[in-house]
Image (cartoon, rainbow, N blue to C red; front, side):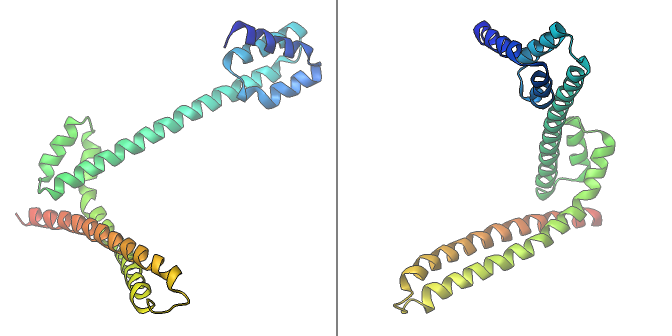
Length: 202
């Protein structure tokens, strides 16, 4: 922010009556830039106004910043966790042993305790994910059949042909895509479960 802009802001603060400046500090301080907030603090000091208002605003600003950092950290942590799970699933699908995956996780700076817990959770989580795609497959079949019905059986209906000729192919393709995706993902997790069971038998 330029010195001219800061001077304008300073003049605006100086023109405000005391009660308006206090209300402004209470309601708008979070939206101010750091430089504008410092000017507000200086104006409070110059007028010898109740500085607890500014101190409270300062705390609110610090909490807001801490919350932003916290949310960022949560996002980073969630992304990292998702990446680690994808890695573990991919390795297990490829037939890697628990020991191989465990050592690979340690190389990624995962703690031994978390690496062990993650590996122990691969099988139940894979079964759960494989089962979860049943609903997706059912929806895929419904879309596919409904699309075929609209495309084929209502083709000769002159009064509604225009509308349903568009929706028929769209629903058919949507159903096929969902079926292909869901079956592929279900197969992936079923493969992981089979590999785990095979490793247990060895």
